[in-house]
Every structure is written in structure tokens, then in C-alpha cells.
Amino acid sequence: MTAETALVVATYSRRMRLLLPDGRRVDARIKGKRIQPVCGDRVEAEPIADEPDWLITSVRERRNQLTRPNLRGKVEVLAANIDRLLVMAAPAPAPDWSIVDRYLCAAELIDASAAIVFNKIDLPANECVDDVLEDYTRIGYLTVRCSAKTGRNIDAVAELLRDGISIIVGQSGVGKSSLINGLLQDDRQRVAAISDKRGEGRHTTVNSAMLELPDGGAVIDSPGVRDYAPALQPREVVVGYREIATAGLDCRFANCRHLREPGCAVKGAVEKGAISTRRYDSYRHLLALTSKLTDAQY
Ligand code: GDP
Ligand code: ZN
Image 1 (cartoon, rainbow, N blue to C red):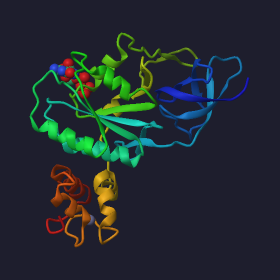
Image 2 (cartoon, protein in one colour; image 1 turned 90 degrees about the horizontal axis):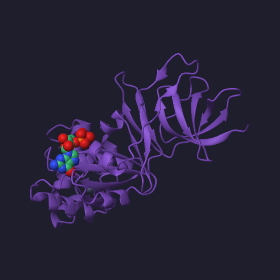
Image 3 (tube, rainbow, N blue to C red; image 1 turned 180 degrees about the vertical axis):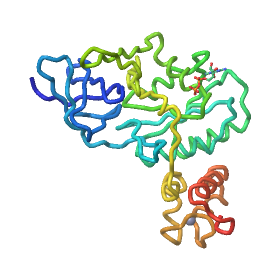
């Protein structure tokens, strides 16, 4: 019996379900208290003699991780090795595009690709939605319009998610759960309870699970991921708006925040219409929020 590199596909507090290279799924526990694998992690694991369980002995270095501060102010890792953030908006609840921008910022920072899904196209939308989506396309984000309710264009979303590991984020009520159910078709995966090692109880609460999509790709889902709101630092905002970061390379000052500095290439680009005013305003707003700027600075 030898050690294997496995993928963590579900977590239940300190117990995990692993996908082994040969396609088998096994339950596992963790060696020691120092390591805490999450969904998406690659781990080294070995079988335990005379037991069905495997033992996770180490976690491979992560390409990236999705984090949030928990109630005790510590950083909690929600998922690891994410290839893509799918950011959702809809006509209802009324889209708050600055929230979409925040998620896009978070995706840039963890070097995940990002795409925007505008759901509920069976409902009437405000006409400025077209312009906003067009702006996102112009700066290189893929956008798809769909309806999780009618199934319209769900195949295009499935296509977007075909490779790698994705997470789906967006305001509450935009249709994330409905979309995931639609993508899974009738194949809603039940994550079986992991039995306790002594058999005296069952850990039925899934912290997070990786759902394999019928057309390829996987989505990591958990209440934490669904409620995820990125905590950003001012310097992260400056690099997270991709078109602003690119234009900012030509500013007179390397540490330009693109507010009132002289020789600011970003402001020039906004005036010429090369950067959307809405995105620039969203940037300034988020920068002010994260750095608590005074009115004079802002
Ligand atoms: P979540 O909070 O983002 O997970 O959103 P839900 O999936 O729970 O959906 C919120 C509400 O929007 C529910 O009442 C859904 O039935 C509804 N909904 C989801 N997708 C669509 C859609 O494409 N069209 C319409 N009209 N309603 C939808
Ligand atoms: Zn500048």
C-alpha cells in the first residue's frame, strides 16, 4: 500500500473525501492538527492498515486560495486551486455592479480567470445592462446571458465551466443555486455521509463539496463560498481593476492611485473614453472604502 496524491472533493470539518488517481473515492482523516486541507487541495495520502479510511499526511503547495476573515478575525480558507470565478448578476435583485467589480478584483488577485453571467434573461432588464456588459467584454471578460429558470443558454455557461475548477459568486438571490442545479441536470450529486471512525455517529454536514459537471469541469460549492465577499486592501484595488492597472503603467508616479495626482494616465484614458466612467467611479469608490480616504484626498 503506497502513498498517493489525491484531490480533496468534500470536507466535513476534520474529515475529507478524496478522489484518488485511479478514480476511487475514499474517506480520509488528517494526520496531526497542523494541516487543514480544503476543497480543491492536492494532498498526499496513504491507506490506514485494516481500516477503510485513508490518512492525509501533507497538503501540496496551493496555486491560490480563496480566503475570508472569520468571526474571530482569523483568515479562513474556503477553497484552493481555483481556476475561475463565475460572477453572477441579474435584473433582480437590482444589479450592484460595484459588487461585480469587487469579485473581478478578487479574481485578478488570485490569478484566476473570471467570467460574468447575467442570469434571469426571462425578466425585463434595465437598458444600461447592455452597456455595462459591453464594457466588461471590451476589457477582456467573457460574458454570457442566461436563464436558470427556462434553461436558455445554460449550455453556454456549461461550456465556460468545461475545464478546471470554478466557483460561482454574486449577490444573494441572483440565482447561483438555481444555476448549479441546472448545470447538474438531474444528476444532482448527493455527497454521502462520511461515517465516523468508530461508527458512533455520522458527519452529515458538508462544509464544502466539489460538484463535477456532466459536460466537464467542476464547481466548488458551500454556504461560505456562496456568501463570499472579498476583503480587499487599497493596493489590491489598484491592481485588481485590470484596465486601470494597465493604463496606470504610464502614470508619472509609479505609486499613482489615479485620484488627484498630476500626470495620471488613467484620468487621461477616462477623459478620452478609453476607460469607462462607471468602472473608474467604481474603482474610486472601492479605493475610498478600503483606505478610508478623507474628502480632500478623494
Ligand atoms: P442564490 O441566492 O444566488 O443562490 O439564488 P437562488 O438560486 O436561490 O435564486 C433566487 C430566486 O431567483 C429564486 O426564487 C429562483 O427561483 C429565482 N431564479 C433563479 N434563476 C432564475 C431565472 O433565470 N429567472 C427567474 N425569473 N428567476 C430565477
Ligand atoms: Zn494615475
